[in-house]
Image (cartoon, rainbow, N blue to C red; front, side, top):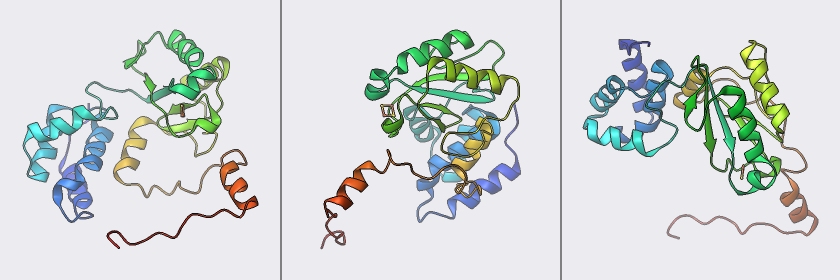
Length: 219
Ligand code: FES
């Protein structure tokens, strides 16, 4: 496991400067620690608490509440498969079962060599393209059991896999770094919103509908 270094501490300080209150930086700072160590360790908890002037109990409370923070090593790739309502109706459980069988891993487990972490995930607000799989939190839309297993096979062979609406897949640690420092230069990669994603807006435009103007809070 990589150690947390003085460079990690300096990067944490950089994140803290974005916020008016130190403690507001806790979530990106935890992602930064996870990008270095592949999980949230006691060492990570201690450093985050120190730089934010919090207790380790306060940091633990956040790190154990949100499921994106892991307490054991994730490995090279995080695989999420949505089995929430719409994805389940359109085959999400079959996708999950096929990938689980391929990896020999269940929910929140890694495969035998620790390369892939498998997780049933909740709705990703991508129901228009259900069933959805995520690889290191990049979308793979409209999956079938066969297409999902093919993605795993290609990643296992070290081949390039490109998200169906985003950049080429990197790895879990790189994504965790993006969650700490969002300006990764990749925002323009991938396709634009398609007709299915824009269906509601299209209908609203056809009917001359628009949202009421926003008002200032408290006005
Ligand atoms: S139910 Fe799977 S993305 Fe919404």
